[in-house]
Length: 200
Image (cartoon, rainbow, N blue to C red; front, side):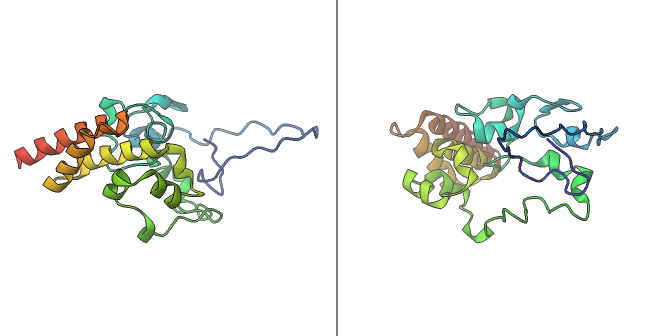
């Protein structure tokens, strides 16, 4: 992650390929000092020491890049997230300056209106064609259709407490035509909701 004193850390990195002999920038100064807010905020303790992240524990990696099953020890930590986690950046003091955008906002990449955001149920039950249409031109497609549905199933297991959602997850878990990672996650989440309902 790169910190900019005026902009914070909420910006995209890019690359320009050129043959121009450009002088390298001076190494950046340490902007963190003794601050530990990001380490304390990480839901999975993925920041194992200052300036060192174990990407395998990071929820952004797990929900976007991971192609297999979500690690069982971090499924509860996922909460109701389905794509990424910015907890470390949201607590960073450099993202509270006058020039820093609000979390989730960007002058060049505006957030989609909340009214167009699918619900967790919609994400779990969407067809591949719906996925392609809804997320056309969106970075959400990096998670893949099965990955996004897997994440939605996990989030439902953490957030839902109703019989209708339980029955939906049980149907998904038992559907032999569905993706194995979605079925596995649906079974875990259904069991979690079932235990929650039994205890209420």
